[in-house]
Amino acid sequence: MQAQFHGIIAYPVTPFAADGSPALDQLAKLIDKLVADGVHAIAPLGSTGESAYLSDAEWDAVAATALASVAKRLPVVVSISDLTTRNAIRRAQFAERHGADAVMVLPVAYWKLSADEIFAHYAAIAQAISIPIMLYNNPGTTGIDMPPELIVRIVKEIDNVTMVKESSGDIQRMNRLMQLGRGDIAFYNGSNPLAFAALTAGATGWCTAAPNLHAALPLALYRAVQEGDLAAARACFLQQLPLLQFIVKGGLPTTVKAGLRLLDFDAGLPRLPLQALPAAAEQELRQILAALPA
Image 1 (cartoon, one colour):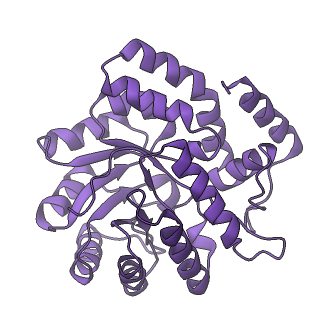
Image 2 (tube, one colour):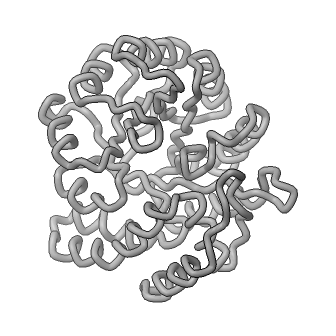
Image 3 (cartoon, helix red, strand yellow):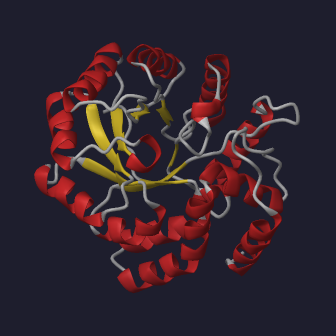
């Protein structure tokens, strides 16, 4: 594996300008901030980055900008998910050419996919690139729920699928994955409210949008778990839990962009049909942010 992903993997939003186009300069500034804050890796173009709402040309521009901005200071895993295998391969190859250390693949489909179709999707992408793949299971956004048995089969039978991000929100499934994989699968938590449980259960890292608004607390949680100080880890987790619950409930692009605006960073509005955070919810977010340590 070309890069070892661990710790806090930060998902930047994709800023938009007033005319609705990707604000690439702001994206570069946001990535610089995340790197300076000390996160362990960057993951552009996931659901937080509104990848599903970008044209191919916009996606390419955001991916290239993100990779150029990181400039090998940290590992980068680029989410290349798409409805079609053909365009997922195109995106994966684009990311590899521009220096990505790995790609993340979430099956996206209008029609319900069979286990064999999902397997073939991953196999085709894997054959087209030489960098590692992070398999991503998020039934809440895709409607596709890959059972642990299928996930382990994909990892064991497709050589460069080496990592698994699980966002179902079910800690028992995470434990089942590690049991079936016999400890050989690099597992990453994608459910913000389960961060403490997942990290203490042995997750290699936590993929999260929270560092856009406050990087110190996720980093402190990970560090406390690594040091075996579970009391400190639990206290740190509870301190940030209101923020984690709020951004998940309100939708990551919408809430994170509102939070950035409250922190005097202009990331623009989410792209329609997503709408700006309502005023009452924004006030609640303001209070949550104000309660966090500086």
